[in-house]
Amino acid sequence: MTLNNLNKQIDIQLKKLGGDAALMIKFLNTKEEIKVNQEFQFWAASVIKIPISCEFFRQVNEGKIKPETKTKIKAENRVEGSGVFKLLNKDDEFTYLDLVTLMLDISDNAGTNEIVDIIGWENVEKYMHQLGLLNTTFRHKMMIKAGRGPNFTTAQDITMLLEKLYNNEIPGATQILTILKQQQDRRRIPLLLPNDIEISNKTGSLEKAVHDAGIIYTKNPFIFVFLSDDQEDKILTNEVLSNCAKLCFDYSIS
Image: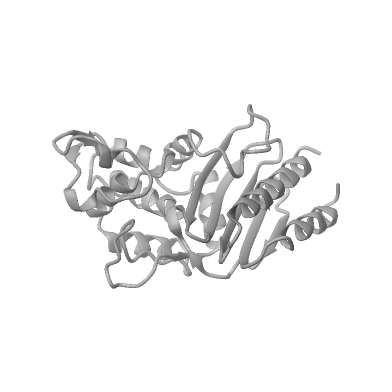
């Protein structure tokens, strides 16, 4: 398969969708790229947890916080949505690293919110802008609207961040990607790929949004970022996302 053929096959998949979608793929050895609406801003949903983890490890690297420090999760942070911390005893203590690990692996919202309090919400967006992710905003915690505006990102920004992680250009890169390899939601990028293929990915979901962003480690490893909105048929959207990931996988090993 040529890159042109891959482009055509992906276009066929994306045309099945209603609503909006963006896709950016970057093959890291050959530097080939596929871009579809890559600069279009979408609600970030839980994909924003990758930037949050980057700011966490930046502060660890600067000695501002220690990952082994323990904390309780405040009542205000025990929000609905994904995760287990909201179900546990209010007096239980967890290390900061525990919170970050479950933030990434099971998309735990309560753990995310506690980490945001620890690192400061405003520092996440500031760090992303320093890294060049100029269309990424972080204004509120998970499931808590603060009147400061939305959490936005683009496929291009997340691709840039994942490439920096892959190249070990930012603090904590190896730890973040290792944690993401333990991702428990296997319904999107990994769905049609062989079970022995390593993948570092983070999903995101809203009522009409289906996201997944990650690195797939083949002989020509590639970054795959899919963002969407206004999707009335999320089953179809998941299917299209997984089909596109499989097409890219097949190309990467050809």
